[in-house]
Image (cartoon, rainbow, N blue to C red; front, side):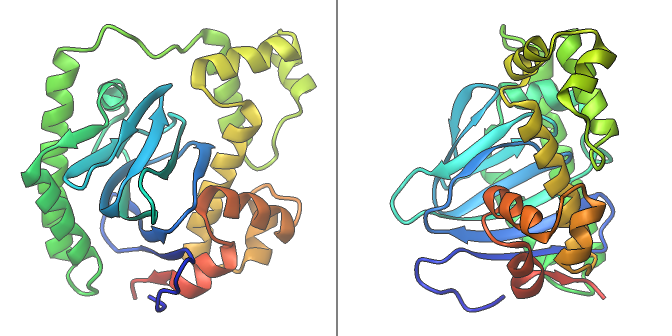
Length: 275
């Protein structure tokens, strides 16, 4: 990773050859705040320095030093420094092979896990993921982490919280439409016609169900795809049109807003791939 400069965000991102791991992302953000956004993967987060506060499903949460946070896919969240000086975090994005979507509700009810054993295991997982040639060790450590996460979520699923995440049928249908047309997009008038709803009602239904506007959700999905392609080695100018952005400047504006650095810095300064 490039040497850190005072007051400036620094990131390192890569995709290891470990089944189930979508991306590894290490970052130091002295002042950056994430807007509301979504991921299509599970976000397994530990904070090594400072603290983060975030909203998930309209409830505020925090990440003390000994906490492991597990944010489920498709659920909007944001994030900002909870203390002066920002935060330093390590994230593993996991696909559904380790955690199924049936566990999303349990994760929404309690994303922050106070578990010292799990915290140590996640830290050791990151160490293994950062060493080329140690993929078997990383797979083994990930298996233990996944098992402990599932145990936490299954216990919570057996005793669910009283509140339920709203998911009205109209909002769900719009989300499915947006998911099917991430790159091409869909004009609001066309979506309203396809779903037999007034445009304003459609926006209100989606925002009320998911806590994020339809356009914010779509941009989050596009940026997520852009991250994967940048880690594959594609330059930002090629990534922009195949992920639904008008041009590289359009990609850069939304990428920096959601990731904290430009696509070029993400790919060129910190990004690395396993051989």
